[in-house]
Amino acid sequence: MCALKICKLGEPVLRQKCKAVKEITPEVRLLISDMLRTLYAVPGVGLAANQVGVPVRVCVIDVGLDGKRQPMALINPVLVKGEGKMEAEEGCLSLPGMWAPVKRFKKVQVNAINEMGIPVTIVGEDLLARALQHEIDHLNGKMFIDYLTAPQKKAIAKEIKDRKKKGEW
Ligand code: NI
Image (cartoon, rainbow, N blue to C red; front, side, top):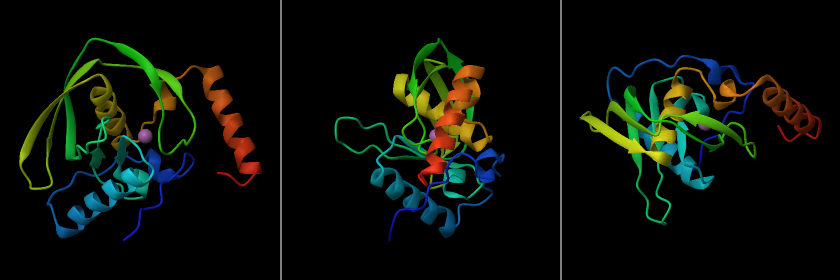
């Protein structure tokens, strides 16, 4: 098995509002394991299903920064609570190599179901809170660049244009 192809900004599926998962079929479980494999291959902190071309409400996150894997798969995640504010550099696997400061809640509560179909509540702070908000945004067709100022967006658009010319996008 190999890692899935990650869609880059400009591919319409990234702007789709993803559909809720009604039943956790073997296909959904396979999607989750392929997404985790893809996340570790990059490596990255989080990945939403529409980033690999599948517009369903599934995301995977692993903020294990100490070398230990802490995989988390969330199906139909919903942000139910957000507290405090923090600003930090944020990136996205669909915008490789691009970073910009984004304001997010410092602490969030997310309700979802896991790959076993069990309802879970995740309370995350700092990087985990940021990843949860970032991935849920993806499932709603939103990307971190949407939070940026017009000049910041312009700079990113120019960078993409330049990379396209070089065949790197
Ligand atoms: Ni992203």
